Amino acid sequence: MSALARFDDLLGRAVSMRALALLRVLAGLVVLLHLQPFLADAADGQTYRDAFYEPYAAWYPELPEAVYIGLLWLAAAAAVAMALGLLTRVATATTFAIVAYNVFLSTTHFHNNRAYLIIVLGLLTLAPCGRELSLDSWIRRRRGRPALDTSAPAWPLWLLRFECAAIYGASGLSKLVDPDWFGGTVTWQRVVRAREDLEAWPLPDWAISVLTDSGFHVGAAKVIVFTELFIALGLWWRGTRYAAVWVAVVFHVTIETSAAVQVFSLLGIAVLVVWAVPSTRDRVLRIDPTSARHRRWGTAVGALDWLARFRVEPASPGSRLELTDRDGTVLRGAPAVAFALSRLPVTAWFALPALLLPPVRRARRAGRAMMPAPMATDER
Amino acid sequence: MVVVAVVGLQIGFAARGYWADHKEFAFHMFPESSTWSAEIVRVTADGHRVPIEQQWSGYRWDELVQDRGLSSPSIRHHADAGLDNQLAFLGAALDWVAENTPRDAETRYLEATVTSWHNDDPPEVEVMRSGEREGAG
Image 1 (spheres, rainbow over the protein chains, first blue to last red):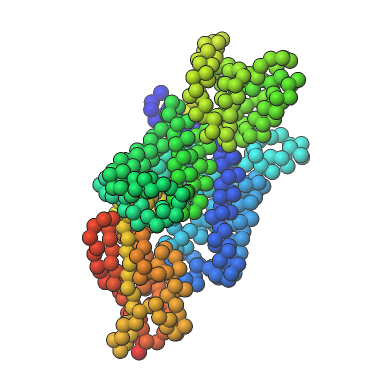
Image 2: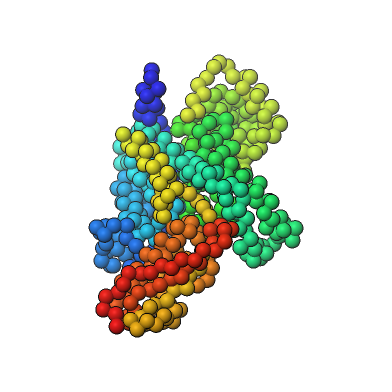
């Protein structure tokens, strides 16, 4: 098979849309945060037209004020419907259309986080991501109709992955080729000018002295640039993906605490779910139903397993908690718990470092040795 | 087809960010530590130069221009998305104010004397003007 045919096959292969369904829920909430300042202004009787704005093109349609404000509220309602998965396709398309329309009304509306939001909404509009984690699917079940197939061609997922990586890559590359950035001048100047803010933080004098030292930034700038590039590239390979996701979360939290970036941090972290392997229920957590502790773990995993990665099954009474990974690796006890938590969206960031602990590593090696036969390890 | 189009567009936008004032979809984040400030005046038909810090004809600059760090131009600000981007916004704001203050019958144009510091380079000074207003004086 030629490379082009393999690529085409990869894009067309049916995969689980679970990650996109979860992203749809999270993106709906992010849209509400994005719209909040526009709606707050509208509630005060203000719109973009009451102050300086700059249309991208003279032909771009501008609506009467009342209609424009109504459209913003419609976008908010559509975002709620999108998050809930009610008339999902229509709600997502409506949200995308109005958010994009609003941003393109003026050059002053455009920010990187809004550009990213438009991209995410556009790609979610193209993907059938309302067949699970949605009121649509719940209503369908209530009416006794068969569930729709939750898998679909993978290309929207691959595009989202590309865009996710491109954002870190474009940012990192632009800094790498800029001598002022890579040499540390930009960060040093920013920190020096914000020294008053820095001194308001509970930092010791020596820390402030280090942070405002130009020599420190010669190294720090390179760490920032290579962090962005590591995230952009590391997400693509199985061996580095979890590390890249972990670093990306730290990166976003750091940015959020040090700069005003609107919804960028929340959106950036939410989109990371698209890097989950697009298959579901291919890991098994076996619990002893007679053990209250096991039952609690089963309930917790069931409640937090938003990416549907686990089946929770009963084991024989008295047995240890056991987890079978998709490649057949078997873990028991604490290593199984650590591994399970590392695969749940909310706990992954905290639990992933635990996988580096020697006892967990030994358990995983031993678990692999117990695999009965070669098993599929599809880690797209 | 959609995949090729999206990938191509994204790469194109990222490349365009290296020369465009407004870097839509280029994702060049925190590009500079550059700063700027501007003394903006209204030049009236009789040649007077009136700072925009003074209200005129019921208008206030900080009510007319509220976004992109332009509401208090005389204070030295960080150019969030780079100096070229910031000055492009300032130029557009001068034009917008000139065109959207109909009660003002005396201003011919607005003029900004901009001092900018690209990263840690020495300051540069340039003068920007709005378009001429019709019917002033």
